[in-house]
Amino acid sequence: MSLKHIVVVDDDVNYAEQLQRSLLRRGYTVDLAHDAASALALASAQLPDAALLDLKLAEDSGLRLIEPLRAMSPDMVIVLLTGYASVATAVEAIKRGADDYLPKPAAIDSILRALNG
Image (cartoon, rainbow, N blue to C red):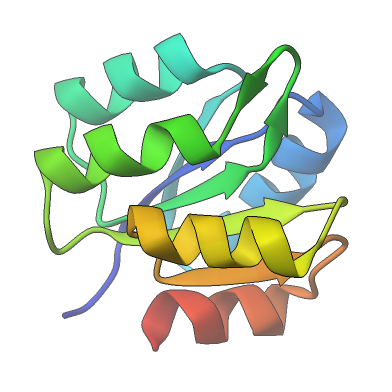
């Protein structure tokens, strides 16, 4: 599967925009969401091929988005990014259906490897 459309979900606006610019330069279409509700609305309006989710979204959690996104599209590639990496959250993310889990700041090449398997 060739990934083209990615939704980036991160409450750190600067980080999300930096990631968006890096992905746009590589030919991807990128939508940004800064909270869980916006992310689900974006994904249901135009189903992305992949989602990059921040673990901590203000008072919410990117973990909560994995199952509804997976339900929208079983083939969506879902990668959790976090500045609070731990074995427990990595295991929880994979159990919920994430394809990969990367600590922040993840290099764009690492993110692309995770997205493209």
